[in-house]
Structures are given as C-alpha cells and as structure tokens.
Image (cartoon, rainbow, N blue to C red; front, side, top):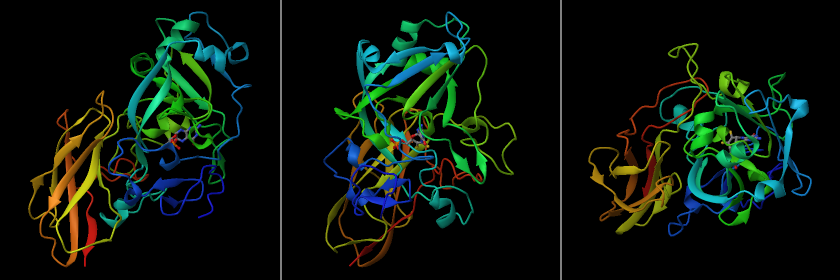
Length: 365
Ligand code: MTE
C-alpha cells in the first residue's frame, strides 16, 4: 500500500491500507508484548496528518466556563513548555475506533453500513504520558458551572459528500475531564508520532476513539452543552430502530480478537492459540472460547491484564487435536461490569459498536 498521508513506516504485513486510514493486522501482533508499539498502532484520520512543531505549538483555552469568561479571541494560550511544568502523569488504556469490526456487519450479519471497513484491527493498548486535564483546568481556573468542553484538532477541515464539517472537534463532559482525561505528548515512552497526534492529543480512557482528539488546538469550556457534527451526525446510533435523539456514543463495548489472520493456515498438531479481550467500562472477568463454530465452549486462560485495569486482557487456549479442514474460532468476553458480548450486534447505519462474537475462520492443513 501507498499510505499517502501516513508518515510512519507501514509494512503491508502489519497493516491493512484504507488510504488515509490503516488497521493493525492481528496476525502481526507479538503475543509476548502487552503494549502495542506506536509504529504498529492503527491510524484513523478524517483529513490528513498535519506537520506541527513543538516549539511553536500553543493550546488555546477559552469559553464562558472559565473562572473568568473569555471569548475565542481572548483565549489563554499554553505553550508546550507551560504544559510540561505541570505534574507528569502516565496511564495505560485501550484506544479503539467506534467503528472497529464494522465489516462484520456485512460479512457476518448481511447488513449494509457506511464507513471504513475495518476488521478487528482498529484497536491497541498503549501507555500514555502527559498531564492530567484536571491539572490544566485548575491552572487556568474553571467555573463551578462548567459542564461541557469542546476539543478541536489542528488538522484540515473534514470534507465529505460535498459538505465541509469544519475542523474535527467533539464535546465531552466536565465530569470526564476531571476524572481521568489526559493531555498526552508521549506513547510507550516515545514522543507521539505525527500520525498519532504530535505534539499533543487528548486521551479519554475507555471512550470511543473519536473522543481522543489528536493535534489538540483548543479547548472551549462552557456552562452549556456544546455540540459538533461529531456528536450529532456522526458517532451516534442512527437508523430505523434508533430514536432521532439517540445520545452521542461514549463508553466502548466489550470486544475480543484472536492473534491470527482470517483464514490462517495452521498445522494439524497441538497448538496454543492466543487472543485479547477489552472493555471500555472496566476489566475483563471471563473469556469463553469455541474451537468448533460455537458447538462447545470452554474457558480461556486469562494470562495478563493491565496494571490499573484499563488495558486489554491477554488470554490463551490449548487446541489439543486440530483436525484437517476448515474451522471457526469464537471468543466471547464478559467484563467486570457484567457486560457479555452478544451473538448479534445492534444494526446501525454507520456501523458503530460491532461488539458481537466474531466468527474467525482458520484452515488446518
Ligand atoms: N483527532 C483529529 N484531530 N482528527 C481526526 O481525524 N480521528 C479520531 C481520533 N482523533 C481524529 C482525531 C478517531 S475517529 C480515532 S479512532 C482516533 O483519533 C484514532 O487515533 P490514532 O490514529 O492515533 O489511532
């Protein structure tokens, strides 16, 4: 693939190329590595990766939700050095696109949806470093009446189907901002790569990927609920079975993947298969697997979880006697909130939240 807008090295054996987007191939995942290397993490861009410079970078903060109300023209500006003077903080979290698994609406449920036809690779777990958003907000002073914050990226406007939606931006609650939101400059101990938001991005752990705005240019803090096309038109459930006022999507569902290619060829001898499960709402409590298309189930061994409970869970299962032929592998996880993956995902026209158990074909030869 050519990856015209993607600046990192992208061997075709590690990614599937969707033009300005790329998904990680699960067959390229190192089963011994808990974290996703930054160079292997999926890329999801609405326009193109901008070239920014840390030395001239400035974050604008404004709005009527600041302790002293400021218009955009009167915005406070924080340089990269200003941000680095605040206490540094690290956290491990899953980053996942809302549309991860979208192609299975078609291949598994026979439904037509719009958007990038991801298989299972629009996800990763990384260790973020930066400053807590709550510390940034405390340093600039916010009003007790603030309820909503709009994050806007510095990438070019998003243009689709003849409509210009403006800069990529999405509001989120002050409650999430004061809880675990991070302004990140690093991933796995490295500076962010341009594709992943250099020099600074927002990270909202457990929430849909669109919430973690890359190339963060401004934060508008408001005493009223802010909106943007990314929480009214996109990243909501839409379609005949959904109410016209369905809420913006926030917390990611429970999902699983095998560390195998689809249709991977396996030798006809005992093998240990590995995979991972994750949830936007907590940790994984249980994973059941089937090696015979769903006829029988057994528990997978949970090998490794994230330290603070926000990364994914690695699991494994021993396949003692793989018979020659075609098989379907299934993995079904339950999180510690009691949410279990369904067998059918809820249809919606934009193909979000495919959380159903994926039927993963393999060949034993
Ligand atoms: N932020 C900006 N400014 N522009 C974008 O196009 N894409 C969003 C989010 N943040 C996007 C953005 C989406 S849809 C996802 S899934 C994640 O970034 C992807 O992050 P990654 O490319 O670092 O994996």
